[in-house]
Length: 174
Ligand code: S3P
Image (cartoon, rainbow, N blue to C red; front, side, top):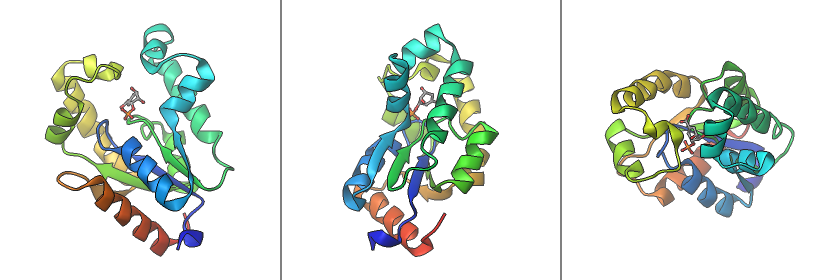
């Protein structure tokens, strides 16, 4: 079954949608290599994500993010967990449409709050709640534009992983 899978599968969606956890499970089941885009950026810059936001600013972070994403364009057998803001830049959306088979992991705002409570490693969570909700609402149509939607609320990571594999195998190509 795995021979029929597209060469790259990307996971997009808001913070707390399960991109990294599901990505790791997917990689295990497909024998693809798992790439966490934030970790790749951290490795390449030698700085943590909070450090990048604090020292370089979000704009530069978005450049690192785009560079990291496009550096994967020609590599096959990858599962890419992108950061929650990666689908905001139009150039990145082109990547998700043309260079990868892209799944949008949908999480409700309520569930996002539950899953990220007490986490300190995401600079954007320091914003006021109303601003985070606006960010969430603004991003929904962008995720939908480039990703095949899968609802995550109330479902196990295993179940979601199985659904992604069967959809990707059925669709076959990008
Ligand atoms: C961001 C999400 C984070 C990380 C950075 C910015 C965003 O990734 O890329 O803090 O803009 O939503 P996760 O979605 O993996 O938390």
